[in-house]
Image (cartoon, rainbow, N blue to C red; front, top):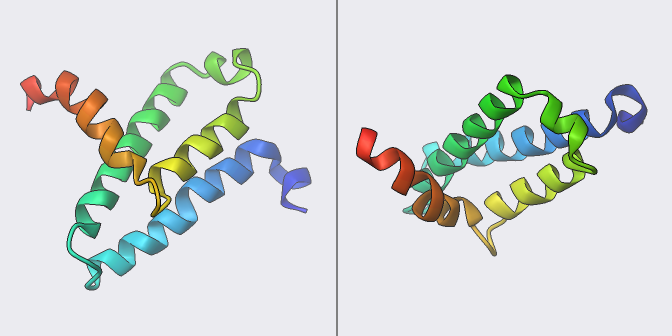
Length: 101
């Protein structure tokens, strides 16, 4: 199975990329109004997390259950019932990055 090939990191990487990429393509091709904003926001958060993981790889080893927690967080970001990406952007990223943009 996929778990034995790449472990939890592979599962979380696939789940945080495949469906969001599919939904982004659908939004580009004429989704509902606001879909573009949701998915652009998601990708900003996704990129930010990947930069943090790349710059500090020790974090993934020090935090217990890092990849299952990451997976749950990213599903919360893009799940249609929650749309957490917008909340994270307005409450965390915009206040800190806004002055520099």
